[in-house]
Length: 217
Image (cartoon, rainbow, N blue to C red):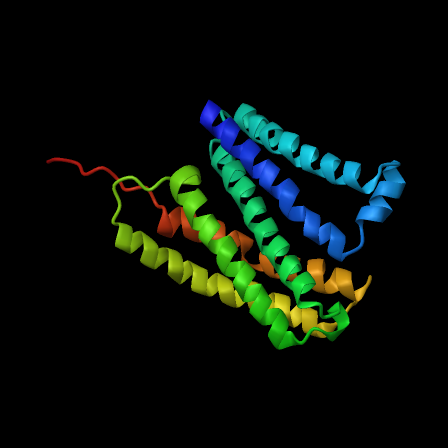
């Protein structure tokens, strides 16, 4: 594992620790968790930030140790770190938009939710492209136009899965927990997981596929 990988994955962990904050506020979990752990609200937020800041490099280090036995695991761990950041950009932006709208979760229309989810999805997807292109898979020696075209083809499919599933789950209404938990966490996570595996396979074997060197005869 290189120093660059260590620093970048630590950055990812720190960003995730920040992006989870509006989610905790929206589902009213700060006070509950703080009371459980005996921490003030501010200390709990700091503890969450530090947890992700430490956990992300540790997880990549473990994948690096296993890499000699399962070579693809290290790359998948990097993809997982980027995917986690994407997920929390998706969740964090959605929760900020829900907070700013001032509309209670049980009054938020499916159209408004789908619009907010599309905005958060597009921001997360742009982040995904930049990180996966420059860090997870690399893109040396490929046509930029071809790469971008394939990326947005995968993105279009993932948009249908992500936003469609999330909006559908939201429309079903809370099967458990509160409306806030269902709208701000359960529904968007259902959409995120719907497109996760397809994203990895599409990015690895279509968008950022390694070019085979030409063999001279």
